[in-house]
Length: 340
Image (cartoon, rainbow, N blue to C red; front, side):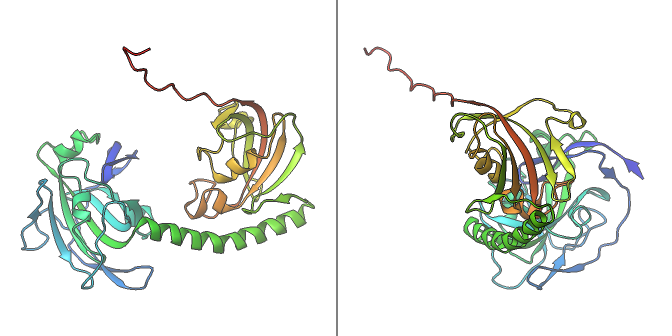
């Protein structure tokens, strides 16, 4: 088995993702169909993984106006919904050149479909063009010119000019932004009850008596500062240590073990940090030290943040506001030359 370091692979529409030390395999696979189940329990047929890029079936590839080649291998239920630009979809994706696998979402995501937004095609041959032509339940093979991927920024020196990168895709679901927002709100509401019970048990066990905000954030002011509370758009400088509910540290700028010992600054209330920080730090003055107990809906939610911050993780932050500075004034409007 040969290893090739792929510093960047275009896995999805116009998105360049890091794929360090990806295995470049030479395993020969036999074309077979695999059935999976969606969250709704409906069967979906996975696109067969072809031994070569042309030996999928006898039907010709279709070519779009932008030159993209694609072929529907298996159709889903009649009348299935098609994604449009702006939708959030879930797919199984197997990306390869002949028998050399570049990316396999089933292996990377434990056989679960991967989510991403549908965007307008960024280059000729961008697979996003085909994503809007297929329906939920369809399996499709898409051929992307290697030359186009390289021009778009993919660092794949081992790809031969004139070659094709094959995407074997199964479209599992598609939702518009309103549906995504409603579903996330529903999931967050259910999770909030679970998180609050975990926090209440934690407070009881540790004999803590924090204050609670309307959003579900808990906090304890350990040392009161001076002056006024931080306000939206002000630059806030903080020292912090983040922990999971079991006390395991995952980040800190006061612990040298995390290799970035310097105050962290951000503009308050502009969603540059998690919602629990924007809300919690707004309760603090310069010099205030506080402990924030943040439910997952105000942190990283169902997706988590990788590593120690898993899905639906409740977080604890020890935070000190070291300085608060006025927001920089907006730039003046362009002057009208020739007028007084």
